[in-house]
View 1 (cartoon, helix red, strand yellow):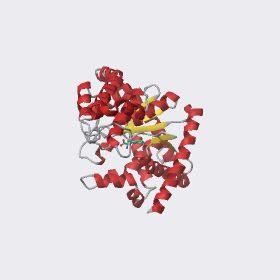
View 2 (view 1 turned 180 degrees about the vertical axis):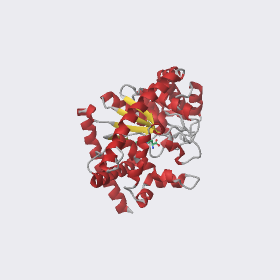
View 3 (view 1 turned 120 degrees about the horizontal axis):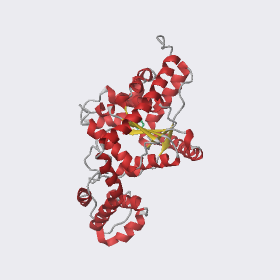
View 4 (view 1 turned 30 degrees about the horizontal axis):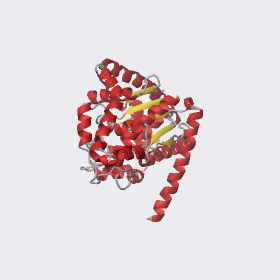
Length: 356
Ligand code: TRP
């Protein structure tokens, strides 16, 4: 066991070093990179996204890196029976993105289901990996065992679908958390095997490890769209205050910042700190003996205050669904042009272009 952990740590350190050097490369020449990232349209984005992945994407966009964001609608059914109210969820997701600062001039937003050639890439890619390799993927394993149903073959193969997302557009950079590193590794395996078999078609994408703080939800578990413990970006101020007032903390009166032993208190301090540009220790000292009630009240005030412009922009956007759909239609057109071109190169490389 210890050996495995040492091995994992060493490989993580190497990934971190590669990521650090990638970050320097991005700063020197942002326009020569392309970032791909995305979300499943299963619910509204929340504070955890805003302070984590979303902030990081917008940071990259502002550095001048072009971005592609995939709305992974086909991935909704990896672990459930139906796609849900997609029209409304997708508009809401696009509104979250734009309200948070995603700029459609620099970022193409598209959905899986509207880009057929992207999905077709899955077929050759599936032929390059084994069933055993897919079963070994830690995220797939974790998600299969957490599910209350037998895992579907779509769940098993979703890292290959993710490889298609990354490779169809030639993304060079994929922002990931540590738990997503194996997905990117699988994409790199697919690139190496494809190029070896059929000639150099794809570039190796790299992982940008983002130092994303894991925010806890109101129940003390990781904040998540599906757990019902999240503060949605679009929540109104009363709901936000009520949810934060009910957030789980601990029984110690005096507020201190101790992420290991007091994770729930630390997460609330982290939220206030990130939004207010101050350190969590400073805020803990300020609240001190006023206790968890004062901490939650401050969190509600800071969250509501800082999200006010985003929320008002979000409301305006949602009142104009034609505009939101237009952003998506533009993104889909860009994605289709790129995907068709990539699929054609793949068919030529594989000698499958026998009808032209
Ligand atoms: N699987 C991601 C999620 O559940 C969404 C996603 C789809 C993605 N394709 C991707 C993320 C490619 C990064 C790269 O949120």
